[in-house]
Image (cartoon, rainbow, N blue to C red; front, side):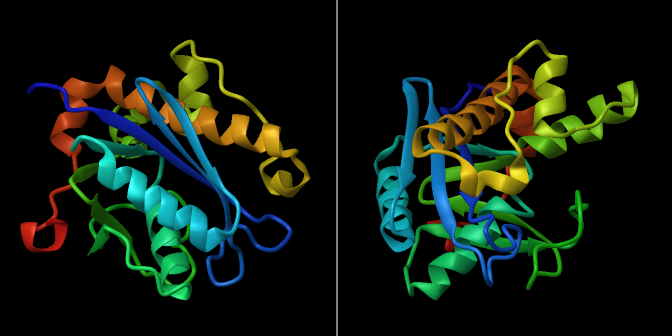
Length: 204
């Protein structure tokens, strides 16, 4: 299968409160990684989400690669958009068959399959978790897999994202989005079969 453009996506949330709960925590930055470079969206939450949605609508149809995005990043974005009454091109379809990495996101019972404008979604975490993790008995966290394949992830204290400077926050978010993209590219033969299938009525 010809490889579609892959766009890495990662969000960072406000850790001055529970950064894992979209009911109380806002999104402070979103990184989008393409083959041409990394793009960062920050500022007021409603504006950054609207700008991200606009940008994704401009890109050639491809695949959004996340790491655990089916359980965290994408439903988190959807919940925050609802709070701002924003209509995004993001479509989520609940899928109870997808195993959770941790407890479900607060307010949700399961993971999701997704599409955003003309882009499919690939949770690259699930690709590595299903074969590499069990075979080699290693953690399938983004940083662990990245180090295992010889990449150099940027490390910070995830519980203190709020202490990062704007430049450090951008660098960290961009690193995670880029790693998700590169790891998806490296496993494309397998990953292509794992792209979410979302009914056209929802994805169109």
